Image (tube, rainbow, N blue to C red):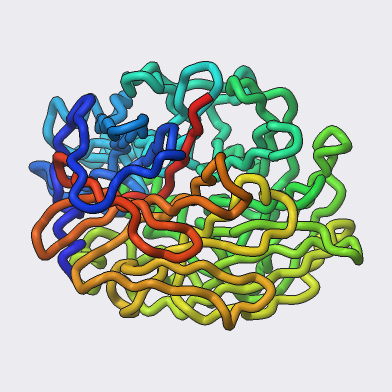
Length: 472
């Protein structure tokens, strides 16, 4: 489990470094930039940040040119990061820590959270890059050099709004869709329509039943945007207010409250057309895709969990002590009636432990033939393989596992623009714990054979999500 070393890594920035090719050669048709948001949980003088989701965002950019790959790696200079860097201690409240200070300081700052901009990225046509964290507003950076500009409201977001880490681009219109929450006396779920310059054109909201915890991902299927709020609730607010508990320590699962499904129609000015409580017992972090079938129902694929235990395993102390737990996840198909919000059926596709599903950009919102993800060979270890899921014949899904102590990030599919749809590459970061080095690997998306392996100049922190932007 050498991946645990990365939890205490103090990432070293670098700028415009040409990557050394260790094996193979750069594909001739690969042109564009890979952006990954990585998360630094380095130890400061008062310990670790508490939870993996509280670490600071560090953006990796790799620009693929004709005969070389150039990489830059920089911390997001958020207000919270700058203040904590100056003091070399974690100050702000988060999922895994209370605010640093005495009793009265904790009370007055119990909800003073840092926006770490640490989960995902969204490149814009305006020359800017959004670093995303679903607990708050996006952070704007320059794509050219990853310089931090600051928080942005997209011409619409309020301070109490959030903007999730999973925006989806409609391949037909080019419009960007996303979801978020508004916190307050009445918690609201929001949907947004944004242009490719990062300006929100339309939005709508609906009230959440109770005070649910997090909205990480959503389903885009045809004209439907489906936000699903699972049965995790924040309960002991008085203990958070008194600084006796962090927010993440207060999340409890209550299946009796049900799963709330919101359906918005983007062809009808984002109108809410369904809002329903369902009483199935499962949770999901990520959806690979969704589409509307011949019966008018939405079919979506999700990585589901029987409970919320995996979230608690991401406390840094738990990761260091126990590794990843056996979360008993499965890759499932959900069938939802978009006119009522009822979850009609949940069917298992695969029982592998996989995560971070990706589809071809052109398939977003419509039926896909293949889904790509990373896969775990040992239930308490990090992900060490890739899988191509055959959606029509799951038993024909293709897997490739890496050697012991080699661990992978989310694999991004990149289309070869000179070839037919589906012909291209998967690109991901590998940490090789046997030699303590980080690499970029490019593999053929059809054969899973390695095309090119490049060494990064420094170790790269753990990562959740990234995007590839093609050269114009």
